[in-house]
Image 1 (cartoon, one colour):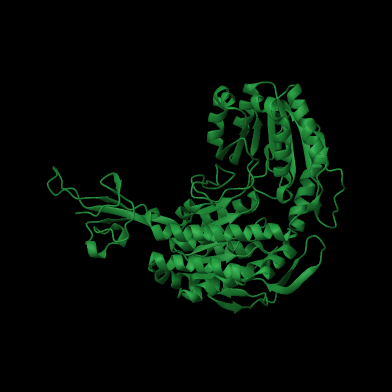
Image 2 (tube, rainbow, N blue to C red; image 1 turned 90 degrees about the vertical axis):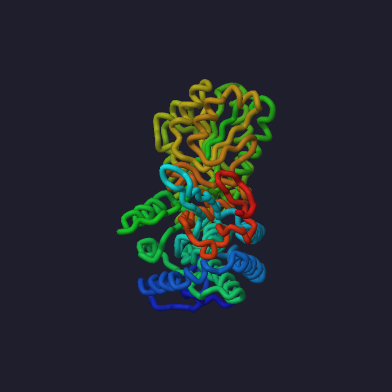
Length: 531
């Protein structure tokens, strides 16, 4: 398709601003056509106004119709063909195979949401039948279910240009719930975003959706995102990115005269604990798996394993040496854009100069700053060196990790207690290790959203049970996930109907249960009709 560089508002291009920017190939520095225009305040308002006009018609569509819309999106994404993958690769430096894998993830999770809303039980319908004879007061008929909140603002992430951007689970979960979406494209891959938006627009037209159900806005300035979050016609927002960016928008969402929920996923250190049983039985395979996880996607994952802890011993020293060998053989690779590369270089230099850190290993090949390359680095310290500097608990985005040797189980627990909220925590060990270190497990349960045993945190499984979240600063709301079908719960609220005529109730609450959804009837789960 021919890229326009325009905003796409309710299916129509808009190019009001004279301020423009271009995408660039991070590996070559080549600027890419076309120029993209900054969204103006009036374009932001137009997009949100269109979303509000679309809200009632969209949320009142049958679930089957909204599911058809989602499946049409998946089909239109595939119809973009290789040119979509090629544009993404040009804007990010990712191999085409990685882009293809992201596209596959998008198609899979979009179809998951379609299946979810067709089945219907996600609305959590609850019915408590009346008892007019109850004393001292009659019991009313009370029924409730989840309903969509209204138009939602979504912010595309830089590190997953297809799978956590225009086509990400944030967008699909909002559309599945019945909420129109206004998305702020990431300026590092605007062409990818426009192509993805075109697929959504074509799907909306095919399935008869209201025109304002989806709009795309471009911009490099913070003002575009802030104005979007502050607009009174936005009722919730979702973001994946840095702690600074997420916190600034979260604060803006809460400064509004009417605050809104802002679901920010902001990354974490994702600690890995290597317990004695694992060190004894399979140190080489753990070291190899760790380095593969550390360097996957040039370390540009919010689940990158940024800290590894074990008990000081000959086995720990051998494990560190084996890891160093694997790191040395790993080639540098191009990062997504100059901003990420600059932050990586600054953080890396600070660690190199840190008095309590020893450079355990780095790639034997030199990285090219001109090609925005990052070389993997692993540092080593003691448990006390780690405890003495809280800054070492901060995430450093890129292929960098810190190994810390502990004197005993209590030292590991002390480190775990110092951890801030994390998206994941990993334990390598045996079942006996888990029993012996149950206090460590108990601490990690309070610190993280996903506990992994004998694996690594990258390569998130997109499924119904997954939870991609965690206590602050990993996210702003720890009970919600940004991956998996539970993500739909971010964009709904419970609505209760008391003594309502059956014919005027939502279908899922009607006595006959015409959709056959699983409901809670007087405290028990059932698909039965109310007799």
